[in-house]
Image 1: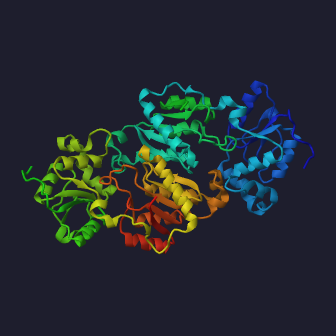
Image 2 (image 1 turned 180 degrees about the vertical axis):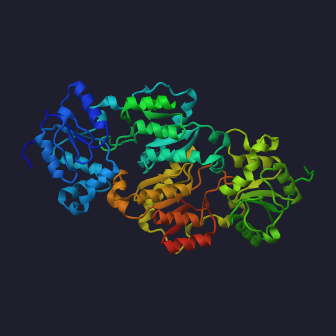
Length: 294
Length: 294
C-alpha cells in the first residue's frame, strides 16, 4: 500500500456501480464546484465519466482499491450505483478462490452486518470517510411536493398516511421500507424481496380476476377499482451510506403496471434516480409522485 | 320464507365449503355428543357427511339457504371449508345476472366489510347466530407445545419472538397474519397475498443463489444457511367466524420448500387442519411445528 495519507481537501471519490446515479452525483457536485472523481467498478459501471473518470477498481481487490483511492488523493468516498445480477455474477466468478484472503474476509464478515457495511468499515478503517448520496448530492433526494404534473388527490391522503403508519410500526424491527395501500387496506409490505418484487406481486394479485380477489377477502368493489399508493420511506436509523431507499423510472412503470394511482415517498429520505424521466413516465401513465413529510 | 323460527336447541349447521375441515368439526362435535348437521355448498363441498348430511345450499340463493337452515331446525351456523378458485368460478358464473337481487346485494354490500362479513350479517339478521370454528371444535385449534416429533430448538426462539413482535406491531393496521424470520432478520411479511404465496416467495428468494442473496443485502453466511421460522397468529380483534388463521399439511410442505426450520403459531389462535397429516409431513421434512403463547 502507498504511504500517501488520504487528502483532506482532495476530490470526493464516487465508487461507481451500474446506472445513471454516479453521473447524476457528478453533475450536481460539479455544478456546485466541488471536486469529484469517479472510480468505476470494473465490469459493473456504465458508460464513461469524461474528465471526472479515474482508475477502475476491482471488487475482488480491496487493497488495490485503497491504493487507487490514495493515488486519486480522495478526501472521502461515496458508494453509488446498482450491481446488476448478471454482471456481478461475472465479477464474482473468482470469489470462491479468493474469499479466504484476509482483506476480503474483513469486508464480508463481522457480526450481523451486511456486505456493504463491511465495505464501509473497510474504507473508513483505511482512512476514507464514507458519505451518503443525500449528503453529497442533496438535490437528488425527493423534494416535498409533487414531482410530476399531478398532485396527490385528496382521496389518496388516507392511504398515504396509512402506508407511512405501517412503515413506522415496523421500523424498530429493521424491516418495511415500502408498502402498497388501497382504500385503507394494506395490500403488500416489503421485506427482503425488494420494492420491485412487491410491486410485481400487487400486479399479479390484481391480474387474478374477480374470483381470486373475492377469495383474498377484498371487498369486490374495492378490488375491481384500480388505485392505491406505493409508500416508501427509510427505516429509522437506516445508514444512508449503504442502504438508501430509491425510486426511479422503473418504480413508476411497475406501479403503473400494478394499477396504482401514485407514489408517495418521504421527502428528503428517498433518492429519486433519473427524476425527469421518472416524472415523465408518471405523467404519461397518469400517476402522481409526491414527496411527503410524514 | 318459512315462518318457522330458528330452534334454540336444534343442531349446529355447518355450512361446508371444500376440504376436510367440515368433517373434522363434525367428528369433534359428535364425539362430544352435540347435534350437528352439514349443509354442503353446492359445487364446493367435498365428499359426503353420512348421517349428518343435510340439504345442499346455493351461494346464489341466500333466501333459499335461510329456508334450508329453518327446515334443518338449526340453532346456529358455522362457516367452514375453503372455496377453491376453479369451483367457485363455476358457481359464480351466474353472478352477474343475479347480483342486483336485493338479498345478494345485502350480502355483498355494506361499508368497508368483506363478503364473508356480509354473509355473517345476513345469517344473523335472519336469526341464526354464527359461531367460530374454535368455539364449536376447540380441539382443532393449535395447542401449546409441539405438534410433531420435533420441539422448537432453543436457537429458534429469537426468530419466533421476533415474528410475533412484527405481527403485533402491524395488528392495529389490520394486516400481518404471518411472517418469516431467519436469524433475527424478517424475510417476508404477509399482507393480501396469503401465507402460501408468502412462503413461495421465500422459496424463490432462496433459489436465487448467492449473488441474488448478496444483492438483497443478506449477510451471505445467513442467506446460505437454511433455516428460519414461519410465525402465524391472528390479528387483534380478528373475527374468527369469518377469517380464521389456518395452517395444514400444505403449509408444512411450502415451509419445507422454503428451507425453513419450522412453524410457530399462536396457541389457541390458529386452526390446524388435518393435524395428524400436517405433523407427519413435518416429521418427514424435519420441521418443528409448535404452538406458542406469545
